[in-house]
Length: 321
Image 1 (cartoon, rainbow, N blue to C red):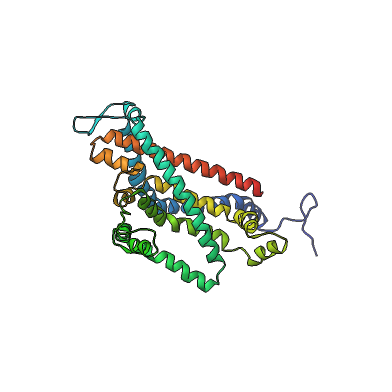
Image 2 (image 1 turned 135 degrees about the horizontal axis):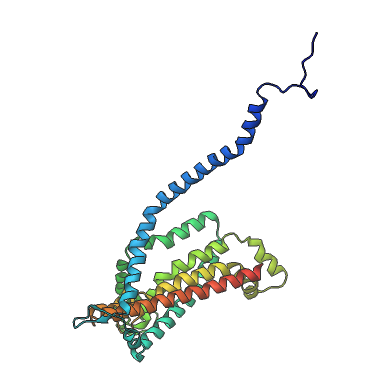
């Protein structure tokens, strides 16, 4: 019996071992290339899926916004159209006390509407969160149902409610607050009521989302520890609802600045908001560059408001952390 050995005395290499070694050596490179192909494919698919939305945002948001910003620095021709050129006179004209009064009135009305909506929204949200789940769904449905109708139709409904001889006038006459037909509309109060009615649901839902998960025993524990009704809300529930209240303030304050229909129909157009000023500059004054400048100022006010609310949210997160 003979034994085969190599010249160095080591065992002979098995057939196919070199091929196996070379296969193992080339494995990672081929695996990396195979891994890159699905990533590139996913990137292409993601780009194709996002392309319609990106094109829509670009064509309907960014391009018109850039045109408005460009027109705000242009000069007007004899008919109020865009003549071209670059000038700051449109923004200088907005520094007139008449226009500054409109901006200050808009900020004040938006702040007041936000404050009232936050208070009412917190009360309604607290009541909703303390009910049973079935009752919560029913009450939420009752809040949502009126907003299935058109906004303009609901505003005209307030005209009927507040008109002389309407239900509100009849109620105030019955309880002795007024005597005879009272002119509730058009007025600044009617315009404010319409603003609260329009934006109250947008304040309710974020606050309700914050209070929905609060355990009812938390308030009971606070009362057992000696907290009264006021401290239960200010020390326990309001800190929990604070993120929702910040979101509600943002969703209420910013849209109020640009409202147009409510001040015209319920307020008679006597006390204008920034939205009414922009429409007036475009249609009645026929000054498109100045209207574009007012639109840019309104946009800057909204961006500044969002920045303030963003800083408040960041500060709140730091405190909670």
